[in-house]
Image: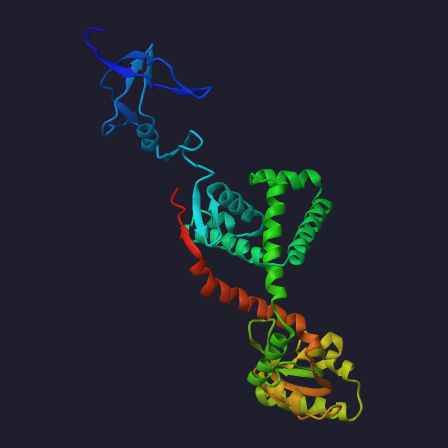
Length: 375
């Protein structure tokens, strides 16, 4: 081969078993020409550490790992399946936890589905911390779903199927499938995603007992005795500043108090609350409804208004109450305390969040063995 250095590659000897007797194929030899090659990547020269290229039967062979990694692609050899993975390997394990693993393919699918449910996904998808949070959520769903009862798991499957049917009905089959295709997932992927998410929620919900609900109810009242107090109150606000015009002054404080007392007297004289509210009130949220706030949580009101609603005798017209908004003339129509049964859904939601947070912060970190999204 003139100026080419000749090399010899000896073919592998292949063994096989025939009727219990070892038979070996004859060794074969091929002749190749090694030569010095220059590798240019986007105008930049890079050289392999030791592997050389060679020519065989008119074709030039170059070291696969060197070229792939020079192009920024990771190379993996799967000996069990005789497969070379270049770039993303969907079977590569990117996370491990007690009881299971997450492959690159599984994570990619779960991650892609976030685009359908998380409005901020597009702007966050390249953020490593966001990616870590997503895979942590996947692991959490799997663990909690695995703890759910068979009944809760089956209920999750039913709920997921109903959600998909509802979406198809709302948007149409064509758009539904197009939306899935846009993020490169299938309907089966979506079904699996929903079942895991709903099933983990079902587990948390089922773990909350009546005793816990009662304890939460009592604890809340211990912190704030009026936490569940509701009242129906009519009021007329005589404001000092106009809330619709960036605080433009309507009247002085003295003028507001004087007018509030006049309105109070009109009410005591038997004039209609609704009529006077529409005529005098500066509260846009109630003047058109007769000044009424019906069955409202008193804890949502400013302290002075709340105090008057709780302490003022029902059915009476009280003296004007001063708040940051001006002066209020108030009539309390009813007041009561929500029962445990009436706030169970609210308490359950609160306890669910607490238990999820406790699991995420205290138990989950000890169950995760590794997360490696470096690939």
